[in-house]
Length: 489
Image 1 (tube, rainbow, N blue to C red):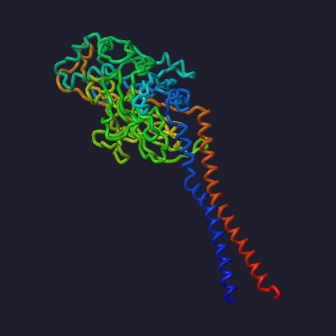
Image 2 (image 1 turned 45 degrees about the vertical axis):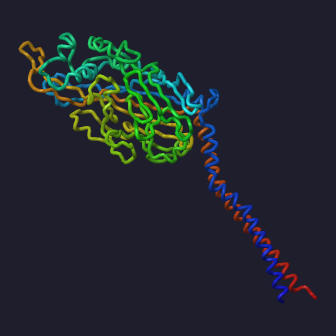
Image 3 (image 1 turned 180 degrees about the vertical axis):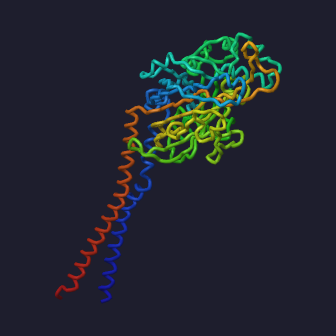
């Protein structure tokens, strides 16, 4: 009896050893695959998007000429109030109406590319080409409106609040309009105009495109933004140096206490990023984009980010906990000689803030129309779709006047001028990814979704096979045991 029991124990231990070996062979690969499947995807993605010194590599070609379609719609604010009212009362109620959109295609290219620091960094300049969109409304070419006189606002800001000296009027002369508003073709505001006041400021302008003044003309075709960035995947696009030809503004590695990215180089693995700080050369400062939610679009799970205006003087780390501002001062980025508190950036229609305090009728802020949303594919960091919406405002001195007996307007010689925020225009920049690149990203996400299912199936299959092996071997062992027990002696 003892001999039989010992034999049974030995047979069970042998079977148990087999079970353990089978379990290890089946479960370990399945569990490892379940845990590390995403790293397989990530390693392939990082290899594909790494910037290397091979001009014909797909990553370098996409970096040099981004595979995106960019359109920018400009909407000017047309002041429909009798503007003579503001001459008598600087805080008079104003009525504004948006113009129809002036839509332009923007092509962004990187030029003067140079590898430095043992191929760890890249130097380059940015070229932007503006061209009227193929469906540009030609009737806008002859459409005029009453707009804020931006050049007057820029010049007047340099003379301070007091009117007593009249130095501004002395400088511009009697024949030059000193009105806050003027009547002008909308297209000229964008594509350029000249005036007597412009001729007085022309010689002080920096950078290219100085024959006219216009919001599109000034930056069209220029290569005035110069970056030095890191290229390693963990810090891809991080700005080390920046310089502009328009204003004497520069960045070095110690300018900010937080990492700043160029916004033109796609940073991979956004799954771990709650906020990113994208440098905007047009305003000479970084803009914070904050993760909002995951959105299913184009058969992919994309990460939605929203734009926030942060006060860098008060919140040095630019974290997600920083309070958002109504507007940010960009005066020094428009002109180095311009006093601060002159040009401001905000969300269109002052979305998210109280617009009624400006005593301007015509604002109707809506999230879908006036907030900014950017949708990134998280593995590669590629922007799949984006609406970047910003509004430019001027905070000019408004001098008050009175009419003399001849009906002419004369500046009041006593008192001080009033500063008042007036919107100039707002821009809606839409970014859309090329179809062929979108299809490649969709393929990655199909593989991700397949692997999500496969990893579960692999574990379940391993467990099922292990259970079947154990049951089968136990059944066979039981039969053998019964057979030997009832075998005739």
